[in-house]
Image: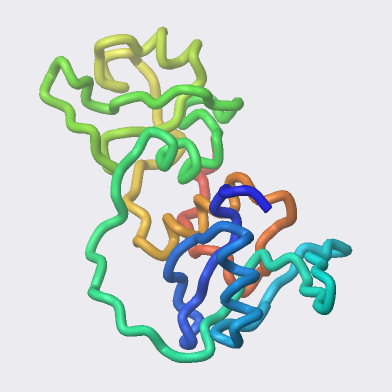
Length: 176
């Protein structure tokens, strides 16, 4: 059981709260503080007297009051995950983050000013806006809610897909 945060924790109201390590998730279930909502198919954690399905999503048994989170923290990894590792200019696999308004021209590291981009398009756009470079965004950047950002981050390295009822409601990409 590694330290990777691979289990999503839902509040008793089914609101995403956090991701925790597999070890912490199993402890919460064994202590009766959480129930397994979605398990990894065919995988079990075994001890001498107990067997628990490997949880992908757990739900707390009691509601936990949390302070209101206004914004999801911006990160390069978060932008790649938000854009599903697809280039905002051509739709191919993205490995870099591009600033719509370049940093050299006052552009910020923010959800609304950054998009995932393939290295080729990022290099071609260079230190210009998309309009100046004659490039068009396939979809505008957007700021995910804190809950959506959490679910997206979990889905980015989860081996099995998240249940459909938990999928974040993200804008559909524009047709090319």
